[in-house]
Length: 312
Image (cartoon, rainbow, N blue to C red; front, top):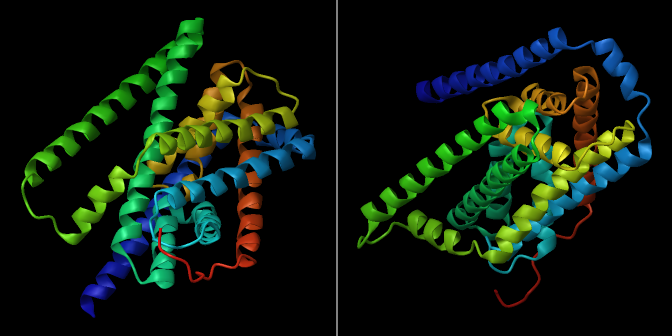
């Protein structure tokens, strides 16, 4: 009983800390830009482009479900089950609970459908690894391309992005090698065996699908910019989106404040006024929230019952 109370108090304090970080980021944005002008710009947005951006967000989550379906986290479950859980977890993530809470919801959903826990957990972790790896690789590729184009204002930021990603990838690779060496020749426990099998499901088509998802996220932000009659090279919204996506790793509820800061920071490097960048960031947040809300309603209408078919 005492331990449960301590854990509950610890979780509550951690939630407050995450919220405080997000609010602090928003305060910094408030000081940096003119919010009145930003809100005035928002009302001028073309709704057609916003709707298109929302559809692209739903498409990304549909592909996220397809990625797990291809990786077969639960044998025999149809794609619509993966889709329903993906859309529902997206809603949880965006409304202030974070990526890991969303994944926890999906694991619980898979457990209710099949009674399995280790397998979906392992595959979700593998899916996250490939997802963030593809985002990081794309960030490096875009940064190199922009530096090659001679964008002087982006040079320092680009070098910082490349350096950070390379360090993170090297550390990750070393950790994996150390774990493999330590476990070599040993009989693996159930969860480690599931993790090993899950990593083997990361095939070429999973990599391709993951990169397509990254590009589509960039396209969704490009739609927001078009809606504000802002026309920039596609690498700008793509780079802004991958930067914002990487902030999901930070301990902030739903990326509040830091995601907006990423959008504003990157677009301002390419000549977009911070106030306009903030308008686009707020609209992006609104479109994502609206899209995930619609996705939640859609998921409730999906028949997720498993039919009597042979396990794949």
